[in-house]
Length: 390
Image 1 (cartoon, rainbow, N blue to C red):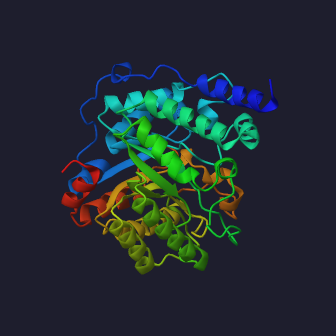
Image 2 (image 1 turned 90 degrees about the vertical axis):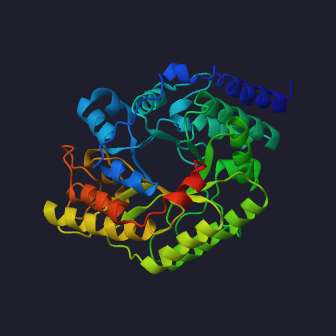
């Protein structure tokens, strides 16, 4: 057998091992009645055609009754923060683990909550064994693997996960852009070329035609020259994809806000309007606020975070195409910011970037969310049309 065939056999064999029996709705219980409180973030948001939710870790969901109570009260939309990333689902060849994702899906269905899937194609959370095989694969082999991965992940939850982040962070990061097309250099790009963006969406649509397919991107919020150029690249590429009939129906803005970075409301408002004019829905997908520029005093920090959140949300919620607001975690004990060297506070104190504190008590950020939803313009009709529920 040739080396090429051996590589094909390994990729195909590993991919085939993914093909577990797709689970039907009965495996996850019936869709329950909505559990959220009328005066909580989701209860207020839904009056304007919006959904509020959070990324959740399944391990905490499974062990903390208090956390489950809060999620049921405050959220109308859930996703696992790592549970459907390839590194979790496929840690090694021949073995898949959907148990963490299953628990999030099961909880959301029981409480009548929408679900997001995150993320099918990303340069991080890629198992080392997959990256190694992609580096050796022909384009046909890489495409076959991508198809089987998407079929398996989406097929397991077909009809239950409303929207999927098909692409995540595909544009080049900070600093000078090396490629003329602005794409990040990743194993997917190396294996399949720039066409992998369109391909991923088409494969995802085949796997679950009912799912809303999203391009999720970072570093689009703040007022820097390189961010403005990045927004322009998004608009140009997204418009071209739509003209080619690529089934991208939503654009996700991560919104990892940083307290010492400038924010220009007028420029961000214009970007949202231009996205909406392309006919896609918009989601704020990973909202949190790095508080390192705010004082050490917790009350002062919480006020700074809440004020920034309100300024940002007042702009975002003005846009009729804005559909969802999702925080990356719901309480301060579940933030990634304390573990990232770029986001550690100079004074060594732990970040307070989310709606609830480390003891899961509501903070001014939660109040700011509710107030922003309550005072937002009512674009329910447009939002229902974009969701396909009008």
